[in-house]
Image 1 (cartoon, rainbow, N blue to C red):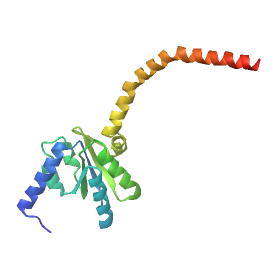
Image 2 (spheres, rainbow, N blue to C red):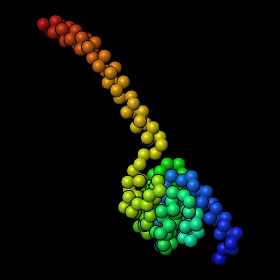
Image 3 (cartoon, one colour):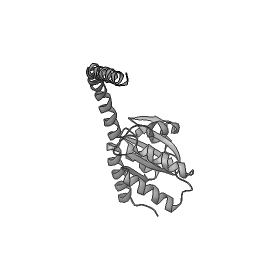
Image 4 (cartoon, one colour):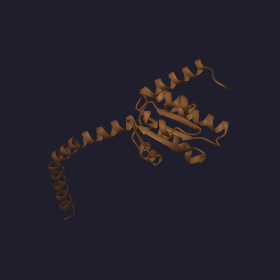
Length: 175
């Protein structure tokens, strides 16, 4: 079904708005996926905060102009679906990586983050980035470690003394 000019403008505007606020973008080839599989992928994308859309490449090129994903323009060839991470940089990469485990027809073609285009092999590295909550937990663990060590160091002489008294008591009771 052919789109009229107004529909094309609406698509470009929609994708451009998403691209302006997205953290990362993945373009993947989806040839061979069934309608049910695509529906499942879209449902997973909605639940994980990923904007997923199949768009004509010419419209996608126009939509990413002026955004940090403009670097993807030359690689937009063939039937592609575009996944934009809206909540954390690794969201779209995790979605595509996890879905591709069970569906070998889905193959990554482009990975972009921070205005740089990376080869498709970098999908794994992007997917391994921690989520916001994981990053905060890691930071808190790093910040808490010196204080915990200091408290253990302060408590150590008292615990040694208690262990010594307990050993003397046990020795007297045995002897």
